[in-house]
Image (tube, rainbow, N blue to C red; front, side, top):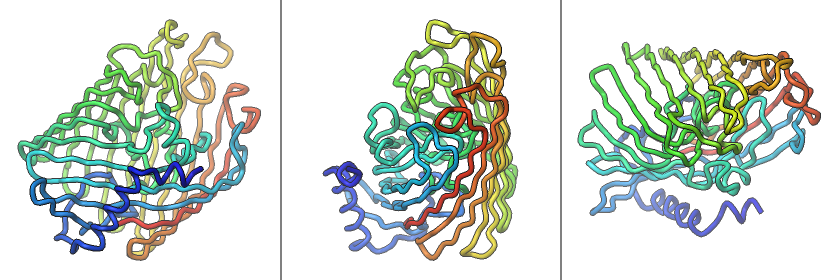
Amino acid sequence: MVLRRLFNPTMVWFLLAAGYACAQTPPPATVTLSVPAMSGPLALSASPPSIDTKIFGTWYIDGAFSGLGLAQSQPAEGDRSVIADISNAQIFVQKIDGLARFYVQLGAYALPTLGQSYAHEVDTVSTWGKFFDAVPQAFIKIAPSESLSFQIGKLPTLIGEEATFTFENVNIERGLLWAQEPAVSRGVQANAVVGPLGFSLSLNDGFYSGRYNWLSGSAAWTINPVNVLVLAAGANLGQTSRNTLATPVAQNNGSIYNLIYTYTKGPLMISPYLQYGQVARNADIGIPSAASLVGGAVLANYAITPNVSLGGRIEYEASSGSANSRPATNLLYGPGSSAASVSVTPTYTHGHWFVRGDMSAVDIFHPTQGDALGSNGDGRTQVRVLLEAGYVF
């Protein structure tokens, strides 16, 4: 079933094109590819395979292929204690110069997230409308200059510090704060760079709702090559009743704010960030009371050697309300609940190959019965161990 869904005719065509490019086209000079976003320790090739289409310019092709194994305590109802899955079978095709540019990301992916039921590869690409299907990101970009551009399509979010896919981040799993953020949004976006300042503004469908009533923006200040400060925010300007795994009705009808600082020097990267989210009462669409959530996280990675690195993440978030008040809006593990997590991720790379582990623990405080972990929804602690191995180019 997994192989049949993964290797559909469209995907096979793109995979063959990638293979042909790798075999027939000499590596180009070093290029900078801004998507997919990579925060390390994994990195796509600085000289990816390319195809000179003559009329339509040079297209670059790279990809990520990996599998993972997971063991966990307190699996949720319908989840399993031990899981093996394809974590990535994706290729990326893009044109990065000229007035008209594009990016297409195609393939299968898993979405392992702390404190959440495991999102299998087969579910993410085949559960139409609940996740992002087999083309999770794709957009056209019009760039009158290198400092001004406009995008339209399925866009990576401007919110948060962690990207969506396992290969993009320090840790294999996404964190607690990521679970409160939009991941992929369909819409339009404008980008401008003025000296050390970078601005983006997007009108989109927020948590993949199909309703284009979200406004998101970010402002980044590159203080110097070592220090970067980012302010990001997004909010629903209307209301949306849709409620799915990718579109939680409360978060999608609220607003969210981030303050992110990143320090990168030599082998060390450290990035603390703060997050605040809120939603107003709207009983007509199933939000019985106003609620808010505040959290903070620190992500870090240290390159011990050129081939070995150690990443980590710590988080804490708390929601408003009380389990004793009815009705109440649940943003976490019940009204008034909070949670903390810690993750450690060692990584070994050899050329384009990699293998890494991920050890994590989540603790929940003041949960509501039925909204926490485990098959009965009353578990307060979950420990996971993951192993991921693969190839990026």
